[in-house]
Length: 89
Image 1 (cartoon, rainbow, N blue to C red):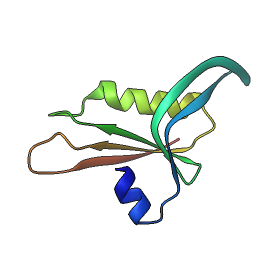
Image 2 (cartoon, rainbow, N blue to C red):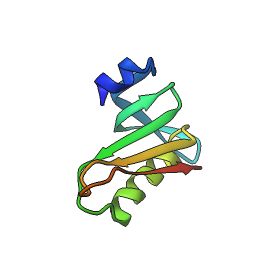
Image 3 (cartoon, rainbow, N blue to C red):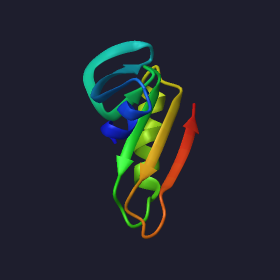
């Protein structure tokens, strides 16, 4: 994924630490996103037969508790197709 993002000149950071907010208070706990692109899009990568509610809930929770508004969930594990879904908070 890093090779493709670099080849397309997409700015990214891998394994980026995300600060968590609760009631507008910044907590010490952090999440780690697979990628953050353009400093504003969380990208989570999966390799599963089927993406279920657990994976979607993870990304939605990241969006809810951080300052990010857009996320992508990309699954390379399903046979014969690439699955992806965009989430907006």
